[in-house]
Length: 120
Image (cartoon, rainbow, N blue to C red; front, side):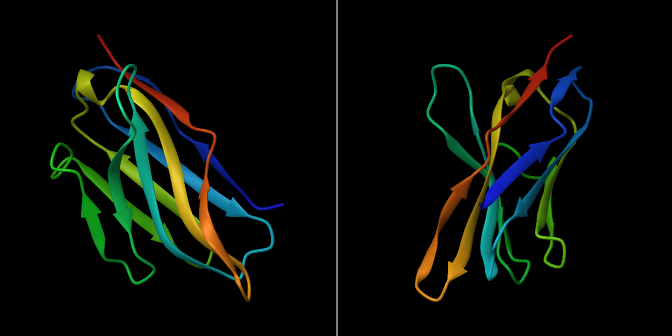
């Protein structure tokens, strides 16, 4: 069974740092784009950062210069380094990956989410 498993969330003070990790496992032929989304209470889920298989990145304006996304294609992992965290970064962060699991089977998969809380 294919799944994405996140780790690394938690409580941090404003200005602090956290690193989120996500590992894809199961019968996977290849992985296209990977990314991180977040959803704060009462708000819609939004893209935080995405990275292509070749390493091209895309960031939400609100996190540019503070967050860095990276991936390891050999390990099927994607990480999100979050620095200079602000209270408005508080949300549940979800890993996303476009996985190819068969000759005609490719779709988006989601992790279960990990809570990030930025508070003093």
